[in-house]
Image 1 (cartoon, rainbow, N blue to C red):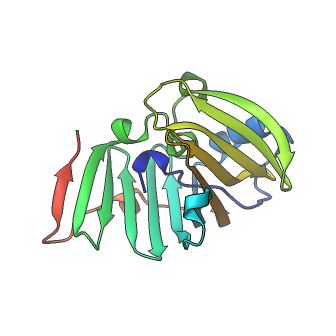
Image 2 (image 1 turned 120 degrees about the horizontal axis):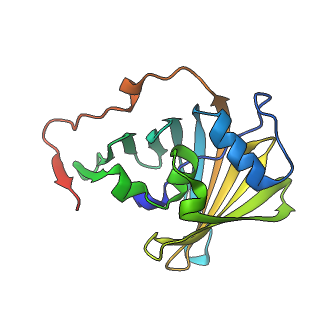
Image 3 (image 1 turned 180 degrees about the vertical axis):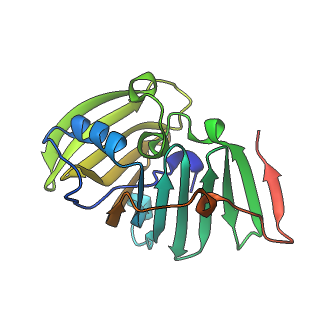
Length: 207
């Protein structure tokens, strides 16, 4: 899973903690302002024709603004992506390898930046409301830059929290991420977002 496609992670189930509007862009802005931390579960899968029959990736996520998040794939294979707010670590146990990137380099204008970051949405994205579908209120975020790695991401909201992301990448592939069992504003310690590479693994610093 590419770091820029994390969307990570990150759609949420309904919560009474938020006052919400039927307008998805307004719900996104309230979510960013009112939910500095959250935990939950995700299911991620490509939905184009070539991906039919493949098992989705499932796991758990958490975030603490600004820029700290943990995206742990549990099935069908383990993979871990952790940001401590300065660097992003992607650990693949099967390959015994950790790649390390700077947060600015990794997130940039990415879905993860929308939901986990603290920068200005309008500086990096064009945000527009879409018609509702599947019982959700939708918006489309288009990155301003041509090097974001994706064309746009559609985000569906339910009761003030994101519930689904549909990301169209630069190769014409669509990835769907559903998030559930969200706990808004739990007390999370910054130490939960630190990562020390296990002994014996290769550490690759990406430029």
